[in-house]
Length: 69
Image 1 (cartoon, rainbow, N blue to C red):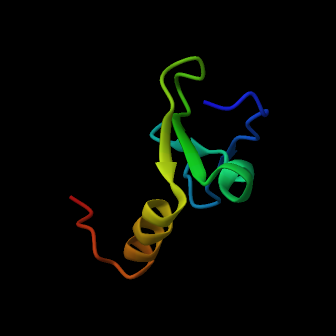
Image 2 (cartoon, rainbow, N blue to C red):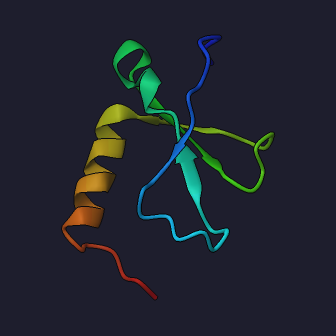
Image 3 (cartoon, one colour):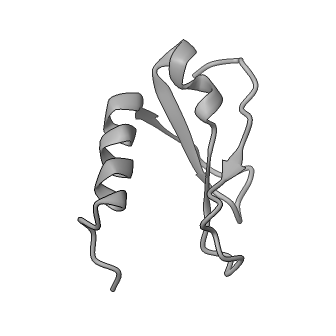
């Protein structure tokens, strides 16, 4: 865990339905992780995803590799 401040952002695709996650991409270059949290539980748990895994996930989403049901 890093003591560097997390700068949380939501996707521009978030629709305001309350089912959003936030990411702190500011730690990707310096720490090799992308922290992810539930936007409804700001003091809840944070998952630290390795940057390579996060990049693969985003590419998969953009390519439509995940079901929407």
